[in-house]
Amino acid sequence: MEKTVCELFAGVGGFRLGLEKSSHEWNTVWANQWEPGKRSQHAFDCYCKQFGHSENHVNYDISQIDKSIIPNHNLLVGGFPCQDYSVARSLSGSHGIDGKKGVLWWQIRDIIETKRPPFVLLENVDRLLKSPASQRGRDFGIMLKCLSDLGYDAEWRVINAADYGCAQKRRRVFIFAYNNTSKYFKKTNDTNENDIINSDGFFAKTFPINQIFNTKQVSLENQTIFDISENFKYDFLNSGYLKGKQIITARIEPIFEDSIPLKYLLEKDVDSKYYLNSNVEKWEYLKGSKKINRTSKSGHEYVFSEGPVAFPDDINKPARTMLTSESSLNRSTHVIEDPQTGKLRLITPLEAERINGFNDNWTKTETMPEKFRYFCMGNALVVPLITRMGQTLNKIFEAE
Image (cartoon, rainbow, N blue to C red; front, top):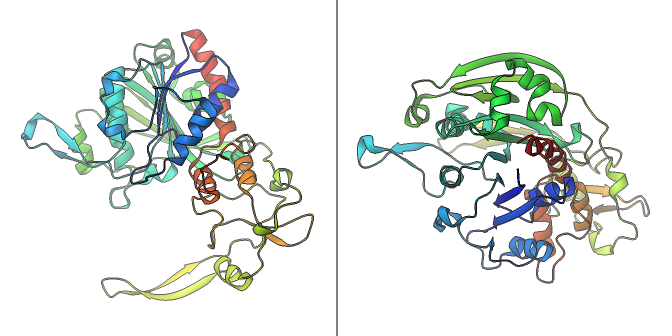
C-alpha cells in the first residue's frame, strides 16, 4: 500500500517529521494548518520552511474547505483540540444531528466520511477520555460511535512520553482507527480480545506493556449519537479498543524505559537574556505550595490549594510537561540551574525543541517571535513517539 498521508492541524509538522524519520517512503499529499484569529500564521510559515511551499500545504480554515478536494490518502493524522463534542437534533427533527459549530472533531469526521482513508491516527490531551466533567466519557463515546458508524474499529492508549525513553513527562491519548476494508481490520477481528491490548494490537506492538488491570466493556448497540450525547457516561481507562459496537477498556502498566534527563539536552554558553536577573522571589512564590481563601461566583467560600513545583527543575530527570506559556513568568515554566554558571535560567527555544525531539532550530524562522517558538513546542507532539508508531505502520502497510 502506498504511504500517502493527509495531515490536519499540522502545527510545525510533528506528525510528518516523525513519520519521515521512520521511513522516507511516507508522502504527505495534503496538509492544513490554520491559527484562527491570527494575522500572522507563524506555525504554517515554519511548516513551509521545513517542507516547502505547495498548493497542497493549505493555510485556511478547515471548516470552510470542501472535503472532496482533499487528495485521496491512506493515512489521516492530526492532533486536534479537546472541545465539547455535544450534539443537538437538527431543525428538521429526525433527519439528523448538528455538532456544535467550530468543534473540529466534526471536520475530521466529515473528511473520514468523504475520503474513507484505510487508517487514521489522532492525538489529543488525555482529559478527552474524561470530558466533560458533568458527563465523563461522553465526548470520547461520541467519537467512537462516529468511527463505528463509518465502518472503523479503533484502539487507544494514553502514553507518557517519558515512560518510553523520551525527555518529557507528557501524557497524551493516541487513537488508531482502521477501516473494515483493510486487511489489518480483518486480522484484528480474528484476534483474541485481551491480546489486542496486551500483545498484538497497534499500541501493544509499539509500546509494550507489563500488565493489564480492570478490563471492562460497554456496548454502543442501538444507541444513536444523539442518545450518547444526552445519556452516555463511562469511565474510560488508559487503554482500550472499539470492535464493532463493543468498547473494551483496561488500565495498563507500561514496560518502562529509561527516559532522557534534561541535562543531556542543554546548550552551553547560553545568552544572558535567559537568566533570572530579578523576580526570583516571585518565581519562588509561584513555584511554592499555597492555600488561598477564595469565593466562588455563587458566594461559596473555599480554600484553593496547590502543591509545590521543583525550583529549580532537576536536570537529572526528564522535563515536565511543556505548556504554551513556557518562558513566561508562571509556575509551569521550566527554570534550571545552568551547569556552567550555577545561575538560574529559563530553557532556550532550542532546548524546548530538543525536549520534544525536533531537530535543532526547527522553529527558527525569519519572522517567528521567540515567544511563539515556545508556544509551538507547548502545542507540539513528542516526535520520537510518532517515529515508533511509524515503524509499526510501515509493517502494517507492507502487509496490506
